[in-house]
Picture 1 (tube, rainbow, N blue to C red):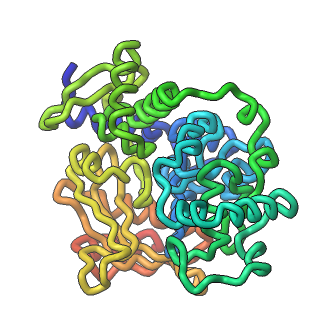
Picture 2: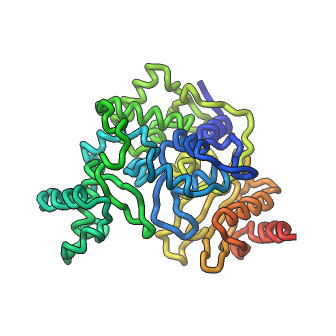
Length: 403
C-alpha cells in the first residue's frame, strides 16, 4: 500500500481524535468524553512549566474544547481511578489499562538515570527506610519525609535530596506510585496497593515481548500510521524490541506495511485506522501534544518545523518562550507565543506567525480559539501580539470580536 502525505496526515488527525466534534464548544464535556480521549491517546505528558497552563490539561482542551479540569483530577486521582502517573513517553498520566504493560520497565529499570541508581547502589538501607515511611505514614511528599533527614551538600540528579532520589527510584521501580499532585505540583507518594485498582494489580503479568506488542499496538492505533521510529518514540521503547513487536503485528495482520510519498523509511498502517476524505479541525496544541511531540514526524506530515525554545536564551529565540502550533483544517497553519497573566486576568499573545500555506481565514479562526482558551482559563481579556507576521491581522480579528 502507498499513501500520499495528505492521506497520511488525515489518517493521523483522525487517529488522534481531531475529526470528531468538540463538545465543549457549545455544550458540556462529560467524564465519558474524557475517558474516550484517555483510551485513544493512552497518556497525557506532564511538564512543570505553567506559563500558560500545565501540559497535561491541554490535550483534552485541544480535542474537546473548554472543560472542567476537575474531570481530569477525578480521572487521575480518585476511585475508580482511570489513570496513573509513570514514565511513559516522558513523565505522564497514563491509561490505567496499560499498568501491566509497563511492568517490564519497572522491573528492568532500563531508562533510570544517575541519581536514582546511585542512591540505591550506595544506600540501599536508606531507600528501604524511605519506603517504610511511605508505608507507615503515606501518602507523603518528599518534603514531608525530608524534615527528619538532613540534606547532603552533594545533590542527586536534578539537585534532589537523598529522600527525593530514593522516592524516584522507588517510583520508577513501581514500589511506590503517585497518589496525586498537590497544589505545589509535588508528587504525593503512596503504595500501589492503596492507589492502583485491584483489577490491575492482580492481573497476570505480561512477559517483555507481550508488553512491547501491547504498547506498539497502542501507539499504532493512536498514530494511525507511522514509521518504526514513530511507533518506538510514542512510549520511548527499545528499538530492537519495537522492531520485533512490529514484525509480530504485521504477521498477525494488525499492521500493514505502507509507503508514504517522499518518506524514505517504510511506514505501518493500523488496520483500524480511519481514512477521512476531509478534516475540519481547529485547535491550539501544547508543545507536548502527541500529534507534534515527535518533531521529525510533525515536519514530514505537516511541513511544519517546530522547536520549543524554553531553554534558548531570550535574545536567541525565533518565536518565543511557550509557542503553541495552531491546527486549522488538516494543516498546522500558524504558531502563537502565549502567557496567562493570572494576576491581571489576561491572556498575553506575545507573538503570532503564519505558515506560508495559511488560508486567509487563519487570523479570524485563531482569534476565536484564543477567546475560547481565555474563557476556559478564566481570563477576561486578551492582549494582542506585537511580534510576528500575523500580528496585525490577528489584532484586527481580536478587535472585531469585541465589536
